[in-house]
Length: 153
Image 1 (cartoon, rainbow, N blue to C red):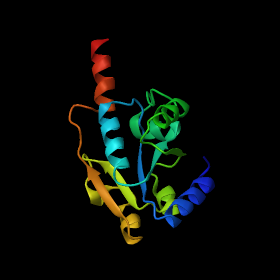
Image 2: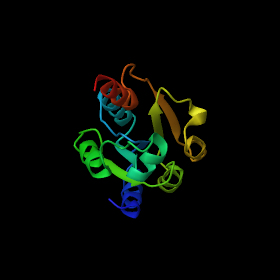
Image 3: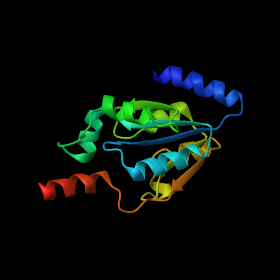
């Protein structure tokens, strides 16, 4: 779905008093930590948007060996989850412009973040929304999974 179409969808849902939840990340290798976090995000509203970094953006953030899975595969995997309503890509280093444009009611991130450090937190709070830091499931990290595979090779 294009950004403008998603905005229209959000406005329609909000007119029906539906709550829009937004989260973002690379979601390079989908693991149990991601699944739990996304499922908990969905419980905070009616429509969950997952914004994922473009392949170039992941490369800048995580290094030249990433992403392991390209945008198309990452997007398809996320769209198959029953608790994810829409997936959108962003090419910038952060999703701040997307957050400003979509103005979700709830912004979520995993427990390895502090509210003050979450990109878009002030935008969402100023528009009347809330920011929720969800518990981090220890032992699950894409970087750690990749590093452990390299060590075993």
